[in-house]
Each structure stands twice: as structure tokens, then as C-alpha cells.
Image (tube, rainbow, N blue to C red; front, side, top):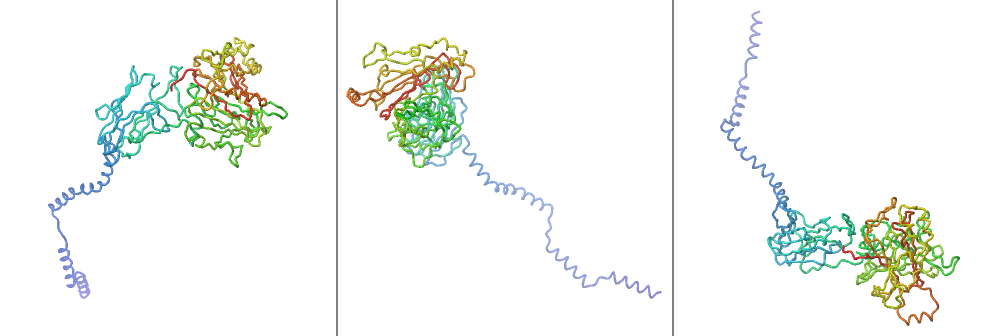
Length: 612
């Protein structure tokens, strides 16, 4: 028992005993930790916190410097000050004005730049800079340009300042502009930028609309290629002279320029040929048809070209292109017209397509003459006319027609030109020589306006005057109106162009002084109402030039002379709606013997010149 207790005691003593070797090792580790550790007091901790708080914003700011610099470069040009980015270029920016009627720019002009500040109020177009302008030298260095616009009861006043000095002024009467501007554009932004000093720079392009001369609140939308009025301000090298805008234009890739002819006058329009194929679509000068707004693929004035054969089953009968089979669309009548710049079709041309190949070479080198060729597919008889269409820049309201026969065509005896869709203009009188006038010289005093009733004694004006009358009755009466010949000798002779010394002139005159007050009948198709100015349809026809030519003609085999006829209508074109005011001249027919050597000319002009 004692021995067992002794053993237990020895066991407990051994468990609680620490060997000397292990004890020495533990003391060594503790000493090493004591040597490596750094002890901080409260003061040291506070100092470290202060240092971190002081340097942390600096570190963050350095990281943002690149971003701040980029923001400064972006915002700096947008301030009211001009930032000169390149001293060798023109530096400029537009400045927002706090006063109405004042437009401002700040600029820097390089030394010896030799620039001008130019201003124009007319001749603003999309083809060139205005050629009629006022100009002042543009000072070098930093300056400010101000344009002041004031409109009052005395007219339109424009004053141009450089800094505080007035350098240019223009005062125009009230009738100079119909109303305030409708569009504004510029090449200069409100941000400072640099521009080359070798090219013109547009500061302001402000274009006004035109008021209709017969309507209190109506306005006229001029075509895109017309000259307009407004305010045009630009900077230009002094040696740069603007080129005049072309007087004649051809097709462009821009679909808005779908016409060819006079830029500001009469033109031929290319159309989809789906409404009335076979007609040459004539677009008169807008100054002669104010109020008859331009519509794509809409015929204001159509010309039907009808060949006449000498032989065949129906000798002397014309073939009507609107009624001929259409090779492109067999289910629709009407021959497609293809316009080309040459009288010979290019090889491989498919007559069923309408892809025109009209180029700049239709205009001569001087830019004052143009010719275009209207090609027709062969008619049912084998006749195939080609109409040479002529334009003279000196006569913006005229268009010429000279018929030809295509190679391989059935021989043509004559070619007829018949007008369509013209009764909306209410031509009811013809200008002729007076019955007492038998001499060769004709003055304006010796001309008489012959009413339509003289050509048609059977017409009772009262029967057709009521537009609300029987439409069916009036439509049937249309068929009763025969063609009436007009003697060439009853027409005056005048000089018509630079190329032809003398021609007969047939003028159809309206009797409606203010067509905007007409009351059109209900149900009239869109486009047939006419709210334009009074105008004339004029035909210029070749005359015998001298007695020697007359004697030669007598000895030569007899030839059919040019004949002129008119026909009245009591309804609007292509409708059964009675014509406002009674019958008017609905069609003109001119028969030209073939082969033709001289063109005939059509002119549509306002009775009183209209300044747009």
C-alpha cells in the first residue's frame, strides 16, 4: 500500500517537472522577440495620423491632374473669351448675344493674312457665294464683329461693326424682303476653332421667304436651286473672287434636282412616267406660276409629240404617244421618254428603261446654251421621233423644240406638238394684228386682244359661267369644240432670239387679274386650282427671213407650212368639272413639216414681271 502511494507521488512529480534544456530554449525565444519589436506610444501614433492626413489629398490630387487638364482643355474654348490655338490661322468663335437683333463673333486674324469681311443681301444660292456684295478689310489681331439687324416702318437696316467702329451699313425699303428669315446656317460654332486663311468662311447664311403678291398671308417656297434674299456674311481672302452661279443646270445625284434647264426659269422634269407617260413634262418659271406650288411627278404643262406619216393606212393621222403601248408596262398605255445628251442612243440602250445619261456636256463651253434630246421608242407605225430640246440662258422663260427622225424610222411627213393640262391658267384671249393693220411693221398699239368668243361664235359664255352647273353637259360640249386654225399672217412678227432674226409670235392672254379670288368648284382634283399671277403662253414660230427665200420657196416643190391651231375647253383638264369663268383655251396644236431646220419656242411669262 505504501509502495503504491509512493509510485503515484513519483508519477505526479515527473509530470510537473520541466527539463532544464526546454526551459533554456523558451528564454531564448522571448529574448529574440524583445529585440525585434518596436513599441509605439500614444504620441507617436498621433504623429503618424497627422502625416497621413496631410499627404493623402496630395496623392489623390496628383492622380486627378490628367483628368483636370483634359476638362480644362474642353471647357476653355466654351468660355466667352477667344482661345487662339494657331497663330498662323484664322481663329474665330460665335458669341451668344444677350440683345435681340445683334449677332457677334470674336476672332484672331494672323499677320499679313489679307482677309476681307463681305456682306450680301441678294443672290444667295447653293451653287456659289454671292457675287454682288460689300466688303471691308479684316483687321489683324484680336477683334469682335457685330451684325445689327433692325426692321422698322422705314425698311430693313443692317449695320456691321468691328469692335465699336461701324464699317458697313445697308438700308433697304420695305418691299426688299417679303418677310423675316426662314432658315439660318453657319460654318462657325460657339467653340473656339481655327480655320485656314486660304478659303472663304461663312459666318451667317440667313434666307428669307417670299410673300405671295396676291395673298395677304401666303408665301412662296422658292426651289432649292433659286437665288434667295437675306443676310449672308463671310470672311474671304481678298484675292478670291466668287464665280457666278450657273444659269443652266443638269441632273445631279441630289434627288431634289430632278429637272434640267434654266436654273431660275423654265425646265424639263424627269418623272416616274407612271401617271401620264408619253408627255414632255414642262415646269414653267416659278415667277410665271406663283401659287402653283411645285409637286414631284406633277404635270403643270405637258407636250404631246405626235408623228404624222405621208403614207400608210391612215395618211395624215397623228399617232398619240399617250395612247401607244408602253414597252416597260404593257398593262399601261403611254410611251416612256428617255432623255439623253446626244442624238444617238448609246449602244446597248434598253428603250424600256428610263435611266437618263445626262451630263455636263449638254451645256456649251460658254455656259449660255444647252440642248437635250428626248428619245421615244418606235411607234406602232415604225415612226420614231427624237425631239431636240433647247435652252438659251438669255431667255430664262423659253424652251425650244426641234424634231428629228431617228435612224431607221418610218419617213415622217410632219410632227405635231400638242399642249396638255394648261386650261388651269385661264387663257381666253389671243394677241393678233388689228384688222386695219396690213403693214410689215407692228407696234404694240396695233395689236388687239381677240377674245375666244370670236373664234367660237357658237359659245354662249352665260351657259358655262356657272361652275356649279351641269358637269356632264359641259363635258359633252368639250367634244363639240373643234380645232380653230390661227393664220400666221394675223400674228405679229418680232425678234425672238439671238440666233433667229424674226419669228411669228402668238400670245395667249389670261383674263383673270387676281386668280387668288376665284372660287373653285367642289371636288376639283388637287393641283388644278391656280392661285398665281396673270401670265401668258407665247409661241415663237419661224418666219421667212427675206424675199429671196420666198422666191426660192415658190420655185421649189410646195411644202406644208407650219400650222397653228387652238381648241377651247369648258372643263378642267382630265376632269368633268366645269371650268371657272367658262370656256378657256385648253390646247394648242402646232404642226411642223419634216425635215425641220428651225426650232419652235414656247414661253410662259408673267403678265407683269414679278421680282422674287
